[in-house]
Length: 306
Ligand SMILES: [Zn+2]
Image (cartoon, rainbow, N blue to C red):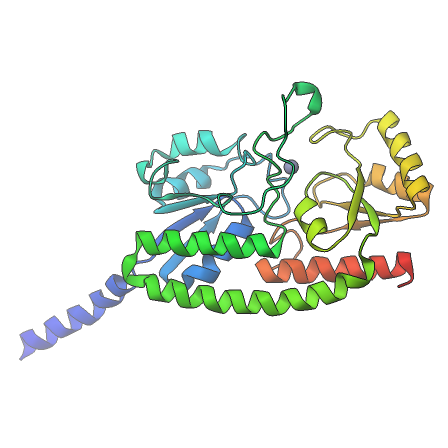
């Protein structure tokens, strides 16, 4: 009797850890981390490496990154060479065969999404930091977010077939919440279709195309190249001619040049969150758009009077 009770107790102590064996998911960005949590729920534990307020092209790998990568069951990357400067050395240091590109535990989230700005012809150094595989900031469009969530669902199901139903159900729930939110965002942005704006870096082509804004110039003379006086003067002239007044800036860039430009054209600088965690309100993938659309429509209302 005592033995049986002991065995039962032992089982009760051991069972939860067995039942809750979670997949260890590491994502390069907080956006991917949010989507992995949406789909995985309590079947996954998620570690996002780069913070949403950091420039995702340039991330200093911390020792904790290597530890996370070494223990991961799945690594999800943005791909399209966004992380080319910091992820390959991390994958080497992590010494984890499961999550090397080409293996079951590596997911490039860009494979099924809509990619813009795929260069045609030869790429030269003179073009700046141009990505040969197209613009890697594709997550900033809810339709792409949905496709990324589908890839994550399928990959998690492949790694943990017993939980396929769980992941499918969580995807459906996410899809429905995203669709409802998209209706709100589209309606809020509708009055401003065709408004010409400027962005600092080419982070927003998918976002602006989706919501109907026309990006007519960039504060950077070329992707990854800091502002130069001659380009800034040209941009000011172009903005005056085309009546562009709004300059969207990512949180990790210096505001001095954008503010000087805004002063010259009687315009406004707006810092938007390019990622989950890029502002404290942007707590997950849906809240990221909620935050950006709110700020953007507020600024556009002021500028256009609509
Ligand atoms: Zn970029």
